[in-house]
Image (cartoon, rainbow, N blue to C red; front, side):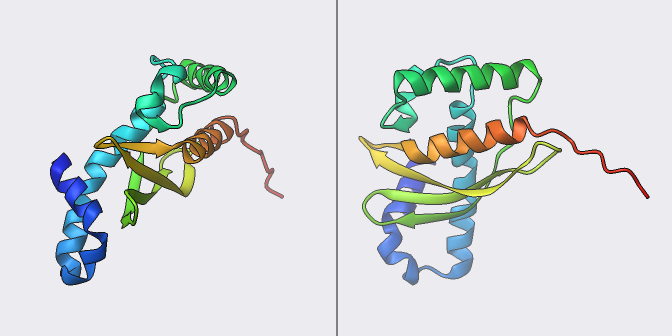
Length: 152
């Protein structure tokens, strides 16, 4: 499956030769492979400093400390693991690919947002800026407080 995904992402210049139905089928199967990136990124049992095989470039020591603290707090409150919804997978030039990621359920849901992967050394990695943005959005939504509006 990884070979098929890599081949699909590399064929961005050839995508106009594929029928829309075949392209949709192939990209929908890619979504099965994309959610583990987000699950690994939000794994509270693995230090953020060791996630350089998921994020490029890796987190700085200060960022890693913040990420670890936020993920531990989210885990302690029962919010992890999160069910990620990955859609709109698109290949891009120069070994990049993009998708839309959301956490679709519950009060602490996260609205859809873009994420970019880059292929390095035959592995797909989340770009640093997108990883930080996604983690910030997850932390923000995990800490939203319900607002009570009385009925008049």
